[in-house]
Image 1 (cartoon, rainbow, N blue to C red):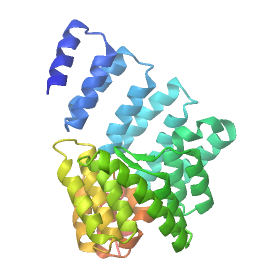
Image 2 (image 1 turned 180 degrees about the vertical axis):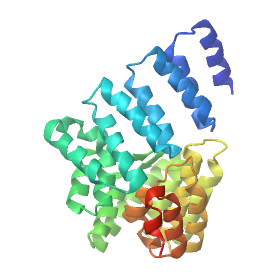
Image 3 (image 1 turned 180 degrees about the horizontal axis):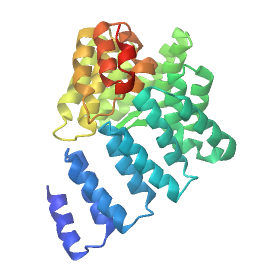
Length: 312
């Protein structure tokens, strides 16, 4: 693409500019050129070794590739530069959740941040909410949601508004009436976004999820399928697979288990945003629990050392 051509020219004229290599790495990641992307982000780090953001981005790539040992190693490098960085601390603890479905390190790290640097909680609110939901701790989930303020929960390119998450928490607590009120409010808000961005897959799949929560089955599936068609992995190697994972979730929420498992089988292949810990623990996937196909998908992501215990 034109951007990479221009960056290549910039690299030749400014061979020691870390930002050029960083941008090349970001573009190559979106194109699915993972090794080249990691290599260029590494070059950026070599030129600017104390840049925490670049190290965090390399770790993110390793996480998407499910190369968890390499992700840990890079995050430890970042932590050695700034041991107080809340985002790095939480990212390192979250590796145990994603790889092994172990929430304890994440829980303890967030508790430590709450006690010692509460102002940083907003920066790690996404992981705090994930941890609370994984532990089915409704009070903690509400506190985590408060840390967002009015900002949406961000799942890469997908933004899930506050009302949707309030609805999810209400449904977890057994308050179906409040859940419906929140999902209805979430839909009104998300519909406005889709009206201004009708061909933007991430906004559409968020609307699809809300419609699924409201039982609007046909609309939900149509929105999920359209999101997948609008943003295939060939266009965006990070967010393309994410669209498919949301279609799987939408299908699960409207009772289409065959479609959900079919889409999820594809969506879980690395590189991708879905982890073992998420599938194993997050309540979003509860409609598929005890379905043998779903359990097989979960088992396929389990760490090798724990694989034996998952067999019947």
